[in-house]
Image (cartoon, rainbow, N blue to C red; front, top):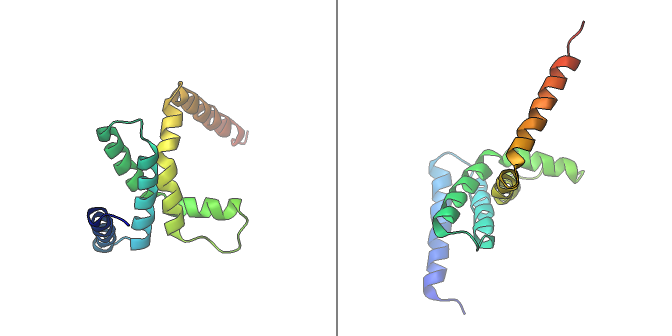
Length: 132
């Protein structure tokens, strides 16, 4: 049986997240999905300090809300579904994957590789798109 304190904390947090979504004009399901994705990441990153986990939680929550629609469209395309997934599912996945992607880029010079690839792509797109 769960402790009353932990059950109260879960209910209070869930109600707070839903209220935040409602008052901010966002879809409450998207905010809850993004929150769940952020919680998934924070609970799986036990090797980080508490301030780092809190910072990553905030970044993950914001990214999940901002990237919910593109993430749900990508998942729909990859899974070859005929109807688009709800944005809340996209928020969950985007929130969970945001920090994983950022950490993968930052480890081992991934930023330089990413920027180099992006620069090469943009320069080749610029040359290939010109009529001449």
